Length: 243
Image (tube, rainbow, N blue to C red; front, side, top):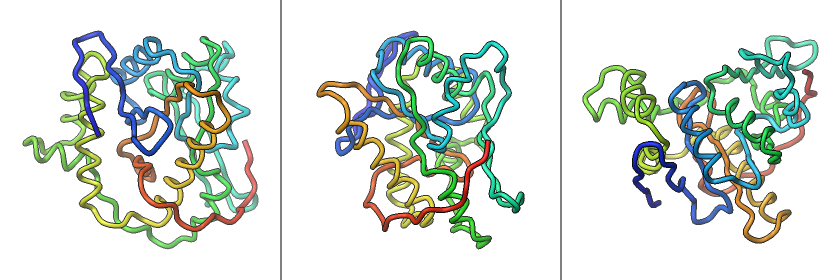
């Protein structure tokens, strides 16, 4: 994986995985600095299609973000009817990179879709068993840099640095850490495999030369972030979706 360096205010080329037909931005869910950087990068690179890590059933709700009455904080909620304890939500603040990216795409007339495993499947996989313990690559990088607080490290290294150049270096470093982490949790592996298939399907459906950009989380509970690897077995259909 290659990284690039750009001066303040200039958007570099984001990471492009050699085996995937898209350029990827590694983000965290909330951060004013990184949200500004992502929006600036999208404005400079002008993608043809934008993909965001989130449940695919919510594609039909994306247009609501352009409504003047839709003001963050807002969230998507998925749950199993009759079993409210089996639920998941995806929050958005005005300083969420995903929210800023959606706003840019809607304003620019760019198709924007969610690319994560459908919530119905994710909830069907939530059997109550404890998932395999996850390593936090951001925490590991913070420790290596001499920080005892990963959030403080992220603030200093990402949020307070203008422009998205740091994302390339982060993606490369985190990729190395994940390569040494062993097999991922099976649910995370299935989600990552699904996102790979979405990226490839979008590429197959669009014209040659179409620029696809995907926003994927680097480190947050329940987010695989890394979409490289082998595809596991297909996922069975799960429960219903409600909004």
